[in-house]
Structure formats: structure tokens, C-alpha cells
Image (tube, rainbow, N blue to C red; front, top):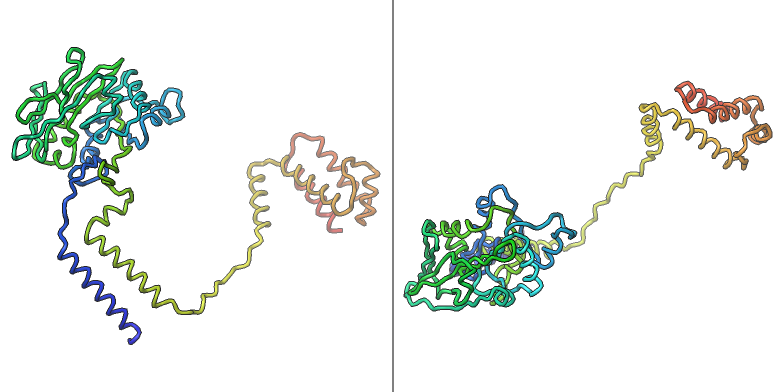
Length: 400
């Protein structure tokens, strides 16, 4: 009892400290804009990601964890991937990672008749230059920080976004060839959603990625706005970009470890730390020298006979007598060469006389065996009787 008392005291102190910290600490909401499809935080997109199979029912959803340049190269017509990429390539937030080569591959992807959808505040410079677009920002003059979102098509539902410092909008674009699909409005109506034809496909550009986050989709009926946006995408496979969704301009927005979510939960975190401390204490107080458990090592079994029996039964069941006879003759002659140092390439009278002499067997018995082997070698078809007779001759040779 005296030995266990210090352990009990330490454990009680740890539990009291954990409870004290959990009571004093209040959990804060992380408003970091990660746009991560695995994040359940307000500005993650896990809800959208889970609903995409319903929005594009009957089509495949693939998550892309690579630069588009490498992924689309691998999954091209002559690439080494498992399919040829066709359909809708969707990028929501954090698209500034795109290299010029990735932009080139995405444009080639669109040129073949596919669709590229990007919702972000700014795009890679190569996209701005290629499509001839400019984006500006206007601060929200409203105290409630609410922006209104609407469509050119009046049959689609309008929506709002709160906690919005201002609106990003297209200040310059080809208004003749490009189609205006939607607007954002604080005090002025600004274009925030356009469609640009490119080759055989089209590019959809949107400037308010927060509309697709968990916070906005789950609030009131704002999900209808998302449905309206995605209705402009063709019914086809979806390639969802997730290359840098774990990072942001302010550092890591999401931990890469699957354990991170549990560590973010206060109760789970302290349960985890307590378990680790208990394990450490157990190792410290039980690090005494103890008698090792003596393992019982079973001797290795000789399974040769069982193996031979299994193989023999296999041949017998398939009635492959020729194979068995050939092997028995081969093994018998090999043993003759090993035991008596005789050349078995020519089975003539001279060989019979030498074998009978060295083996101490009657010449007539040896001659019957060798002649039967010679006769079997001339046959193409064998029966069970041939195998039995050969086996009797060989057994008689070794018994005498």
C-alpha cells in the first residue's frame, strides 16, 4: 500500500489540474478560411464536399491532391493514370498556388470540351492575362457586414453573406464574348460571376468562395445559392482540388494528422494526455527487474512426408500417371548415380551387370526392373497398373 500511495497522489493531482484548466478555458471558434474539404470549421467546405455526389448524381467525384499539371498529364489520353480526365475541374479558394504550367494544362483541359470552375478572390496571374480580366475590391459600408448575392437568371434564388468585409468583383472583362452570370451588392451592384468560353469548353469564374463554406451553406436557405452556381456546370465527373487546402497565408489552417481533430477537442485532448501520463508512470514504477517469461519453443516438424503425400494424392486424383512414372524413374536413376556412381544414360546389359554387382542383387531381378523402365520410356499412355508394377519392382530392388 505504501508503494502505491505516491502513484495515487500524482494521479489525483493530474486529474484536478486537468479539470481546473478545462473549467477556466473557453473554446474559441476558428474562423480561418481553409476551404478544406475535410474541415468542419466554419470556413471549411466539408458540407459541400459531402453533397457534391448528390449534386452530380451518377457521376464520379475525385479529389486531386496534386498540381493540375502533374494530375492532368498523368490522366490524359496517353498518360500513365487509370483514366482520361474529363468533366468539371473545381477549385474553391487558395488557387494562387497554380503555376503557369498548371494553368496551361487546365486551359488544355477546357479546350478539349471540359469545364473549369474557380471561386476565389484572385486567380493566378496567367489566368488574368489569358482571359483579360481584372479584379477589384470594395469595402462593405454596412455595419452588419452583409453582402447580397444574386444571379442574372432571376429564376435562381438570391442569397446573403454576413461577416463580409467587402466584395471582390470583376472590374474588367470581355463583356461581348463573356456571359455575366451573377452579382454581389453592398451599396453597388458588381459582377462577381462570369462564364468565359474557351476552345470547346468553358471557364466559370466566381469571386466569393465563402459562399461555399460550412457556415454559409448551413445558415438559413443559403445552400440554394450554391445549387444555383453549380447548376451552370455540366452533368459530368467532378475533380475537386485539394492541393493546398491545408495551408493559408497565415500559416497552417488545418493539421495534416488525423489526430488533430481530437486534440482540438478539450475533453479528448486531456483524455489523451492523461493516458500518456499514466503510461509513463506505469513504466517508471514498474521498471523493476523481473523474471522473464520462458518461451516454450516447439521443435520444427518434419513435414516432408506430408508434403510428398499431398503431391502424390494430387497426381493420383488427376490420373496423371505419366507424370508420376516419369518422376519415379528419374528419382530412381538419380539415386543409382549417387549411391553406386554409375552412368545411367545407357541402360544396356553392361549397365545391368555393373548395377547387380555393386548393389548385391540378382542379375535377373535387376534386368526385369531395367527392362521394364526401358519399356515404359517407349510408351505415351499409362495406366494405374503400370505405376503399381513399377513401384513393386523398385521396392523389391531395395528390399533384397
